[in-house]
Amino acid sequence: MKKEKDDNLIAQNKKARHDYFIKETVEAGIALTGTEIKSVRARRINLRDGYVQIYGGSAYLENVHISEYKQGNRYNHDPLRSRRLLLHKKEIARLAKAQSERGIAIIPLKVYLKHGFAKVLIGVGQGKKEYDKRQTIKERDQKREIRRKYGI
Figure 1 (cartoon, rainbow, N blue to C red):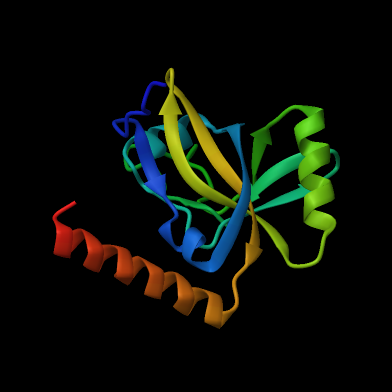
Figure 2: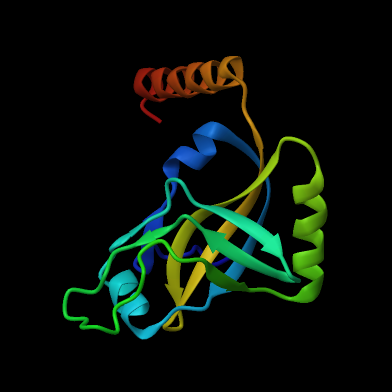
């Protein structure tokens, strides 16, 4: 199996895996304007507070900040506008069903370029409680200690 290169990784939402148990991931394209894709390629994107909303039979990426393009003029984009995700109808239906469950959120995990197109990896996650977060930190520290002790 070929390992994915991180050369094309644009942005990553590290806080998402800390706050949610990720059950499923889906790759989706993003419908961007010209100045938005230029800003994305310049790595001027923030996924931290982003989420996916499904309405009108389409999925939209909400609250993801893509900075204005520096060389853009009056045609520059709104940094926090809703961006349509390019998914198949079956995928949208599956995500809508998951979103209707209590405690489930659909969040962006990372943005990357694939064959020149911007893609977003979205995850269906269930929120962690405070004790779950502490347990995750404890397990991570134990693994780090084992690696340090045995030189793995």
